[in-house]
Image (tube, rainbow, N blue to C red; front, side, top):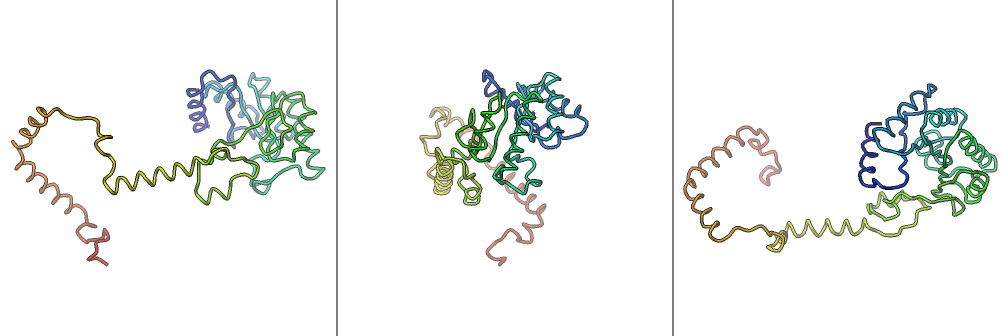
Length: 263
C-alpha cells in the first residue's frame, strides 16, 4: 500500500486537473473476509494518494460484498474481470479468459454482480471480443477493454508496451498479443545510450559545446596563482592519501582486482 500510495501521489502531482484518477488496490489489501480492511486501505488511497476512486480485481460474491462495503463507505470503485493479473498463480498464468461458453457466461454474471454492488465501471481484460461486447451491451455502467476487442466502452493499454519503451529481446517475448505498437521508443533509447557510452569512451563528450560554464581569462590566471602557492603540499598530500588507501585495501595489496600480472 505504501508503494502504491507513493505512485498515486506522483500521478496526482503530474495530472492535477485530470477528470478521474483511479488507484489500483494491490494484492493483499482488500481480499480479507473482514471487509473493513479493504475500506481502510481504500480510504488511504483516496485521502493520502489523492485518488478519485479505487480498482480491485475479481467478480465473486465475496468480491461484490467488498465493493458494496466500499461504495457504501463513500468510495468509488472500478471492477475488473477476465484476466486478473494479481491472481495469475490461481488461473494458471497470463491466459485469456472466457473462451468457453460456460466461462463466458460466468464473466457476464461477475460483471453484473459488480455492477449491482455499486461499481461505476468494469475493466474487461483478455476476453473474446464477442463476449466483451455482450457484457458491455448488458451493463448500464461503462466497460474498459484491454485485449477485449472493439466493442467495449473504452480502451486502455500499458504505455510501455504501446510505445515499445523496452527493446530487450527478453521483453519482446512478453509483449501482449493484443498490443499494437505505436512507436519503438526502446530502440531509440538503446541507440542513444550506446552513442553516449561511445562518445564518453572516445573523449568526444563533453566537448566545448557542452561545457558552457567558463571563467574569464583574468580569473583563470588568478586561479593558477592560487594553485601554484601550495602545489608541493598538495602533491605530498596526494601521495600520502594514495598510500593510506592502498594499505587499507587488502584486495589492492594482493592484486586481486584483475591485474594482468595476476592471471
